Length: 277
Image (cartoon, rainbow, N blue to C red; front, side, top):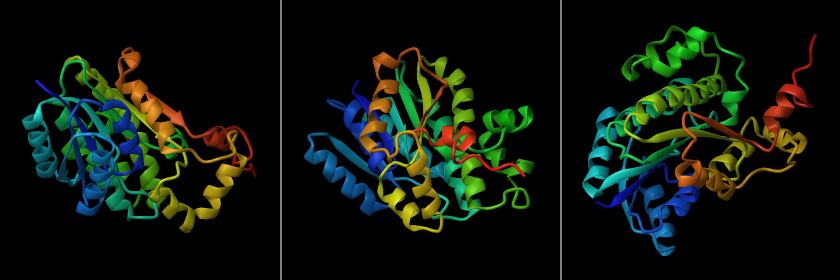
């Protein structure tokens, strides 16, 4: 049976990982918007890949289940690259939690039911999850293990508790890495692996939106004082994704890989650290 790679989110990072792991394997490329899917599919086809497209709304169980059905009709799902999401400048706290937190849990649940033995998944989280102050043990467990349909009902995710879109994004991305850790146990029973990558500022169209948005000055400051002194590229995330999805990463599962050029280090222990009193 053919091995299928599913790419959810037609952006630069999803494409970069797909190019490294999909040679000789059909790709099912899905996005919320047809124009994004068509543009990415054209780029990948022109590079020699076999691509089938679909539309998906990761915040809808019916939509994700339809994507799973289409994927399994093409062959055995051996790889999932989940790179769909919305940023703080693009959406309200409610939408961010629904897409980035609930949507990721839904993708992990549904594809975890069909992933092939030897398969692997990479979820794109964010450095933002590493800048959220520590949660309680109970909150960590709740984000990791609460049944998907109950997730958005957690008390600390309610409107009165989530301050703004950035806070919702940080909670979602912290939740992604915790969810992946818990899902790694279930995926392991199928002989499959799942990990998160938490990129920093990677130059993509979404990053350009952020750099031009209300928090653009803060993002430029992050780049300036980071150890790397620059933003990252999708290809660099693709390199890590290829490691995690390939045989060289066979001993890695339930892990989160922070790759932000040292921004988080600067936030906790360097020039970006909050000044005390």
